[in-house]
Length: 297
Image (cartoon, rainbow, N blue to C red; front, side, top):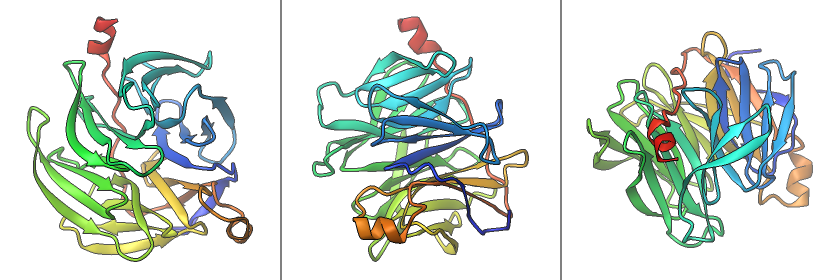
């Protein structure tokens, strides 16, 4: 595997691959196919492949502190038991918004879950950025998004990054001790035909941003300066995660959603899981603390 030279790890053909996750405890990579209603898993070399059907469209999959995973789906947060292949509702979200679904998520160092909702028709600004912390309640932090994407945080936990995909902007926020967000500002604006999608922040504080319809990942420093880009052989790049034993292996999800038959023929690996090596390690993947939710149940 070459530095910054992506290779296809699994030509899985996901319609909307998303939510790349490195699970260090098992040494496996997980990701979802939102439109295909699937969870996929494989080893870092592409072996040990397994897939599960989901009861609703899955936006993200993240580890839980006491084992297992939390899966954000249409209608709420579900606990996923991969041995049984079962899902149990942990927390209902936006049951009064029938066209909304959950889209992307992140767990901070304190075990709080940040996640966004969106209009699945991609028309109305009904999307919300939520934080679910020690209280057990999902608190709305930001509103009026059509598509929320990529919550991620700086290594010191003081800056949250979040993408407003259709407005083509990535915002930065100051994170207060109580989780409140302040001083919203534009971190990056994407021009041309590309849209900001999922992201990850490395151990140096650089922001790595996947570009849907952009065919690349862009790397920015903490000041918002574009440092470099990594090209992929697919137009729709959706999410990335740092993993491997040294956290210097990057795993990238892609999609063929919205592509014509001719476009799909020209990009046969669209929807595949890709990987490449980088010069800087990522951050450790944190686990969601669901104690308060279990007490409510």
